[in-house]
Length: 79
Image (cartoon, rainbow, N blue to C red; front, side):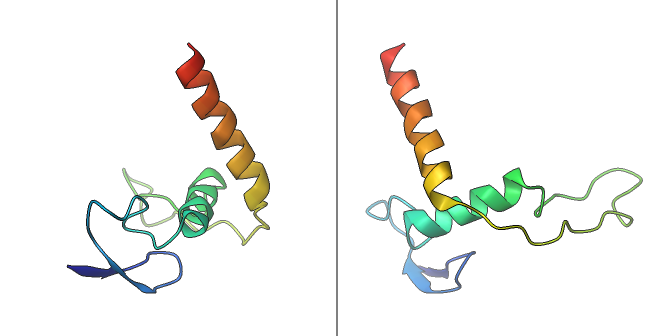
């Protein structure tokens, strides 16, 4: 099955061989994570779901996110 990457919209294969699915690359996966962390993405809920607005676009430093994730992975496996 083929799906579109949520970040760049490139068509990618949905399979267990694609470790980043539904994303095409780790970069797109991290961009999406950064958008959630910056609250640019949100799931509307409750009484205020119609009043929620998007957060302005912010610069995302991919290298910092990758470093943070690598440190968390290292901490996880060392404990």
